[in-house]
Structure formats: C-alpha cells, structure tokens
Image 1: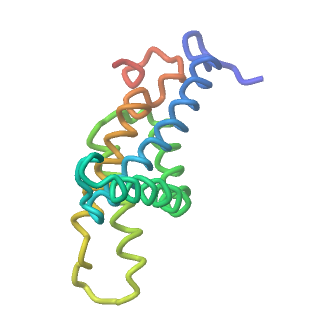
Image 2: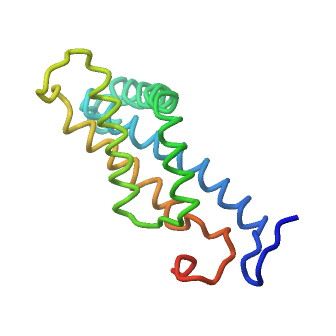
Length: 156
C-alpha cells in the first residue's frame, strides 16, 4: 500500500467523474470537429431551405467524427494522460495540442513529401482548435482535480 501524506490521497469519486468527463469531452470534441469539416464541405444552409443537404452534412459529420476519432485516439490519449498527470488546465495547451494533432495527421497523410502546405490546412487547423476548445470546456479545465493534493498545482 502506498504511503500517502495527509491531503495527497487519491479521490476515487473525483477520478471516476473525471474519466467520464474525459470520455464525453473527447466524443463531443470529435463531433464538433466532424461537423465543422462537413459544414465547410457542404456549406449547407438552414434546414428549411435545403433539408437534404443539411441531413447529408449532419450524417457525414458524424461519420467523419468516428473516422477522426479512430485516427487521433492514441496521440490524444497520450496528451490527455500528460495533462491529467501534470494538472494542465490551460485553455491554450488544449487548443494548441489538438490543433497540432490535427495538423500532424493532415500533414503526415499527404504522402507528397513537399514542404508546401496542403490545400485545406487552415481548415484542418481550425477544426483541431475547435475540438480542443470543446474538450477544454468539458474536461480540460478540471484536469488533475482528482489528485486531491493541496499544492499549488491543485489550486484553481
């Protein structure tokens, strides 16, 4: 049994709540990213004006979210574990990290070997930034809250 000092015990309830926030935050971030990319592709208007285009946009956004989720699961999980372990609650960290993941996946998937930006790179960056902001709203601002310590990293 580990020897915890007073005030440094692990809070199981907070850990379980944070794990739920992480899963929900990741899912909603993927949905936001997928819908953002689909909306940019279809440029669908209001559902009353063209309901078929709007339904196609929503459907492809959800499918896109699942593909994006499968692609970024491992790098995102690594960054989430780091953020939780070090209690990184910074909005800038979460937005920049998700933008970097999106851009790296986009760049590595090009296969061209050139140093030029691929068409659509700013859109991919914006989608990654949006995903990071959504994740931060749901789970990132409480990163590491389950540690239970009273040190400076544990304060809000």
